[in-house]
Length: 452
Image: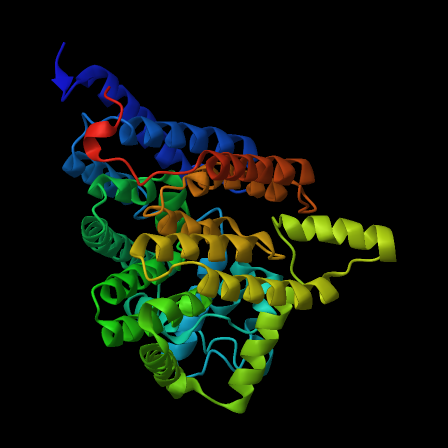
């Protein structure tokens, strides 16, 4: 029988075909209400991911080819698992018409202005849902620039706008492939480890499929870390500012850089990062922007609940003690606990060492999400990305089981199945505790992977 490396070619082609069919159905045949089908096709895709990744017979280039092909399956699809892309297009078209997207929310704008000012405005507002359409945007300025690009290219077509956004997301993944390899090479780790992220169906589905922009943020974050480790701290600070200007999450990591930089450079680093963020916000800046942006952030921490772990335990205890939902109180206290924990990580751990720093970043983001009131599936990409260099693989397990959170959309009245949430986090924390007790070793070189 013909073989691909040491793997039977018939077996390989059959598995590729099965995974391609699964991705095709995820792209064009499954809605988020079809939880059973979603779980089945995602499970097949994840099984294929583990098969390809854990066999040294498959070359680095072959895995890159698969990662690209699986993404291209989604190219002309309209996201079915998330309606956030409607808000992206709305913000972009608002910018295209000369309006500041931070100063109004869609439903209010449609009531106050001519409904035709934003092309397909009513359709976009309906598509994003009432909850999204009744709140101010929370997307930072570099994210808004991507939305503007989509509006510029696809001003008359939602599908063309979607295609434009998808090209940006795929370009970011290519950037992660390039920068991730440089980081792995610098740290003396097998470059193959980048596929824990890039070949993962969770990443393909949530970013190329659902158009979430955490991938763009991660590209800039990895670039910034590489520059930091190679003693180019000014460039690192500039690029981190770009990352923050896509998503605010990288701000969590700033305290961890203190030991690596030292007092003088750390102050300079923080100032440069802040300057870049302020410069990018400058075209939009106003008192109303600050008030609107902060009100949306406050809502996120003190009103929204989804797929939480520790917070749900705190909430349950709160119900027993007070008789009501304590989210308003917990939403103020838990971020403080997170901040204190990250500061402790910054000063207790030896973050001058590159791998220690990367592992501290993993623990920082894990603590943040463990204590958050809302953990959307695509958020898991950040711990997954920074785990590549640490040797810990519990974020890979998390990326496998976070799909269970979509069960909430399978109910007519949209409600979470807390048994499935408990199952999700039981798996994550079990793997985490096992790895902590066993102790992890640096990621294995290519030759150490299982052969087919």
